[in-house]
Amino acid sequence: MKKLTILIAALIVLIPSLAHADMLTFRLGYYMPNAVMTNSYLASHPNTLWGIELTQMSLLRSDYKGAILGGGYEFFLTPQISLALSVDFFSRENGGYYWDYVANTVDDVDYAFPAQDFRGRDILHTFRVSMTPVQLSFKFAPLGRKARIIPYVGAGGGAYFVSASIYGSIVDFSQEFIYTDPVLGDVTVYEVKGAHLHETRVVLGGHAFAGFMFPIGYRLTLEGEARYHFAKVTFNDAFQGYDKFDLSGLSLSVGFNYWF
Image (tube, rainbow, N blue to C red; front, side, top):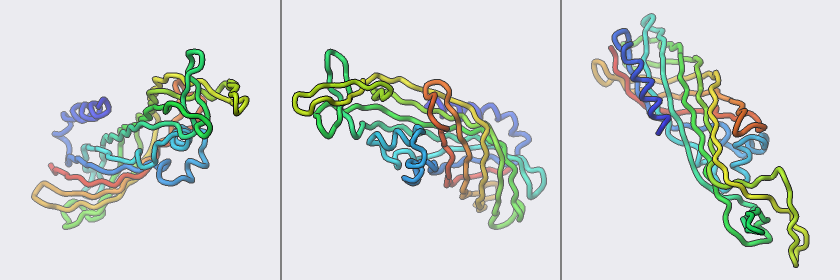
């Protein structure tokens, strides 16, 4: 909700530019981060948040694909070339439990025990990711704005606000403890700790897109678009020590345009 408020506020700030704008756009799409498209990414990036959360937890890759909302203003420099300023918003949040560990209390301290050998409580937490790119794009429509079908391509860059959060309980693998079981003998266990981790970073990113617009009225067109975002960030606080967090991916969207 906070990111959606930022999106709306950013568009409101741009309202004074309407007098000079040539087109206003709103779009709704489906975003697919690269990291959750195949298991090969997770296998080759084990020290990323994606690699850890989606292999150790019951979270599914499909949990982190979802809606992306966007809008912007477009200024025509020529009948075929325009400059677009836009804002998008993507966020997904889901909860899960550790596959391989359960929690048991020993001397008032919670420890993670191997699930294959012990019964216990699920160790649960929520993993949330979000991305809000503020983008400046050059767009080329070779047939101009008066064709029956208006194809276009474009690319640009911008500031990407990337966030990750973990809330709940986590297994602290940084220190091992030994629990002596009367049947199994010495068993390695880890302390279970409460976690309220959140970090947001701003990184320069890029994008490229292509699509079509279809006139449905004197000033209205519908559009269909494919847009690829490039966004990788290094967290230095709550998630320090992990490899770069990659929220690059593909969005497929539909929208409408109002022409001035």
